[in-house]
Length: 143
Image (cartoon, rainbow, N blue to C red; front, side):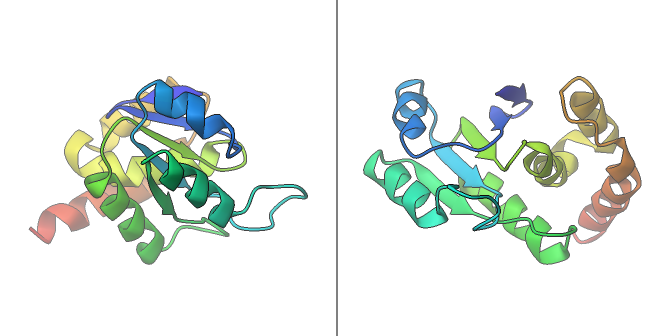
């Protein structure tokens, strides 16, 4: 598990039983970016959501299958804005979750700071820098 700015932790696949420990460590929200049935024996979003709900954790299922879309980015921005922190976000390896974290935080941190944080993490996503810059400008123009 790797901490990114904004009190967000990114990791690979979680299991429902692991949410108890995360809750005891103070985690308040879970964002699941892994599509259903991506791998054998992968927990379903429903089982993850039920485990989160039983622990009073806020849970969002925002699966990233294929590339980025404006709907996926906006759903992520909304989830990060609404979810109490600290947050754990996950997918198979953490890479997709880190990319969606980047778009959700570019408005407050700026593209340069987001990329710097990612460069210091296990998630090398420098290839999304032009998209982050474009998205940051669009968000500023829409205000």
